[in-house]
Image (tube, rainbow, N blue to C red; front, top):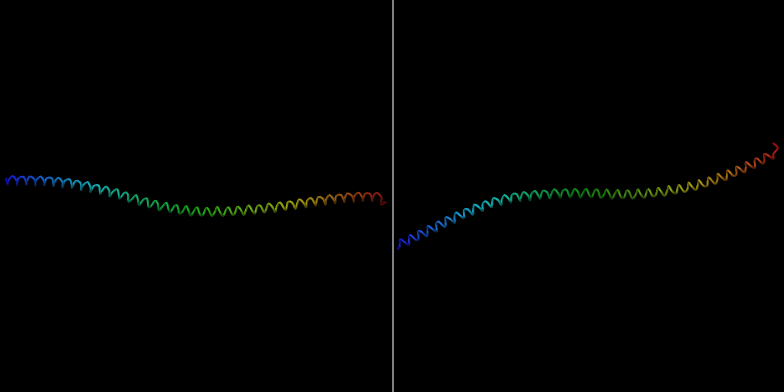
Length: 142
C-alpha cells in the first residue's frame, strides 16, 4: 500500500510537474506576446511622439506666420488710415480751391459786367461827342 501511495504521489507530482511545465509554457507564450505588444506599442509611441513633434513644429510655424500676418495687417491698417486722412485733406483742399475759384469767377464776371457797362458808356459818350463834333463842324466856318 505504501508503494501505491508513493506511486500515486509520484503520479500526482508528475502530473503537477506537467501542469507546471504547461503553465510555464503558457506564461512564456504570454510573456512573448506581451513583449511583442510592448514593442508594437513602443513603435506606435515613437511614431506618435514624432507626430506630436511634427504638430508642435507646425503650430510654432503657424504662430510665426500669424504673427507676421498680424504685423502686416497693422502696417496695412496704418497705411489705409494715413491714406484716408490724406484723401480727406485733399478733398478739403480741393473744396477750398473750388470755392476760391468760384469767388474769383464771380469777381471776374462782376468786373467784366462793369467794364462792359463802362465801355458802353464810353461808346455812347464817344458817339455823342462825335455827333456834337459833327454838329459843331457843320456850324463852324472853317
